Image (cartoon, rainbow, N blue to C red; front, side, top):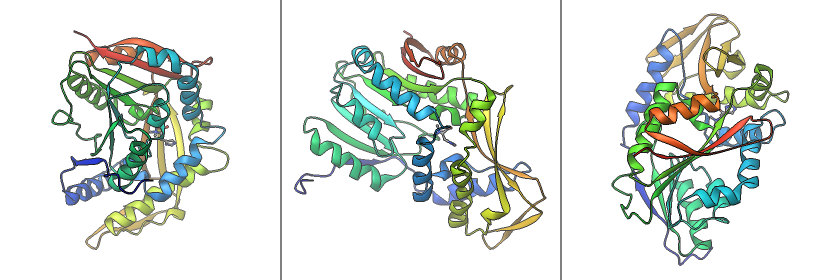
Length: 327
Ligand code: AVJ
């Protein structure tokens, strides 16, 4: 990399209230039904394990979405606004956006993620290969709050295109998913777009295998969240005292991941508080909601968006929706 190049601009949209984060984590653990927000999966180990999950035979979403993107790259590019302000929500290492840059030429790339340092180095790398692309990093927990208005230009010839791949929308319960879509709709202006990947409903056996693989990678990923919590709260969860469980709830149309206590135990949460778990009691760590084409199209409509295009795979396991504001 050319070290003389300035680093991409990094905007910090996170309110510096780490204590509030800790409090929310504590509140979740103290509830009768204990829960941990799935955003805590992704420490360095968690990110590595998630990469391995994406390569598993049983975990089809990542590769199915990638195949749709690849197969329809021409059609999708043709349907996307040109010279866009391309906003990658939860961009991670920006690898998915990077692949799109072979097909489209946005005016700006705005990568939004919680991990700031990592974000800046990934964007710097992209910027060095695309001198005409303005790269901006936004450090933000957009699952709680997303406001890019101060940053977005209102140039009608450079509309915002929100890119939200990977079926990450599935982590939200439906009212929260709707809230995020409405928030995106608001920031789309008149001629913005949303390109979103959504995992579709299929037989429970396929879904449950995807979240409980034979090699136990997902189990390790789920249990690792306890190490993250130990760090954040100076807690003393013992991962070996819990087991991974993934169940599909066909009424709620979602996978639920739990950590089940193997035996009765006490866990120290910081130095002032203890949480007891009885044998078989579980901590909820993740929802992964699944949609039908109809139910997701309807949710888009409720958010003031209309689906203009839909691309899917031969088994109709995954949907890539392109939507724009209803005017
Ligand atoms: C990153 C939220 C899309 O729900 O499939 C994978 C996370 N959890 N295996 C998903 C996940 C367990 C994933 N998302």
